[in-house]
Amino acid sequence: MSRYLRLRRGGAVSFFTVNLEDPSRDLLTRHARGLGIAVRTVRDKHPFTVHAWVLMPNHLHCVLELPPADDDFGVRWRLIKSVFSRSLPMDEARSPSRANRGERGNWQRRYWEHRIENPQNLRAHIDYVHINPIKHGYVTRLADWPWSTFHRYVAQGLYPPDWAGPL
Image: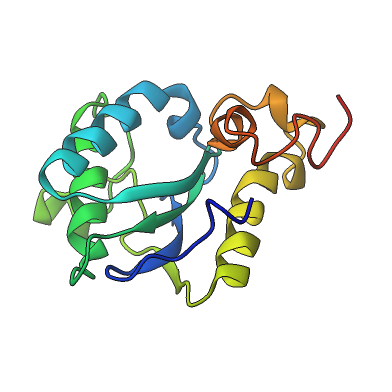
């Protein structure tokens, strides 16, 4: 995997956890196509590289890299959340403060970020992203979880198909 895990000079690289407001909802896997459209729409105007990504029903993890001299992940997450939320029916519960601001109630307002500083840290976070469906008990084989860049890593020969579990 080392050929893929070289940090480039330039933009910031970070690991993210982004959660839905209501952990009992499964919006991310149920509307995965809409989230993909939101990500591509934002990436067209505000470029970034996806090193790893996994959708869970109520949260996601990813490792993203920005272009050189760019560290504004916030605008990207704000836009991804907004574009995705606008694609959904307005059926979520909203607090009075969200309603007063015209905000949807799908996402937690904040996200968790960890800056990646070296190749070992990058690899550990990419592995963490990919192992998440097993960690949460959704599958016993990562090949069975469709919402992950794990499949891209297998196709590129960076992971064996049975990584982290039997085939």
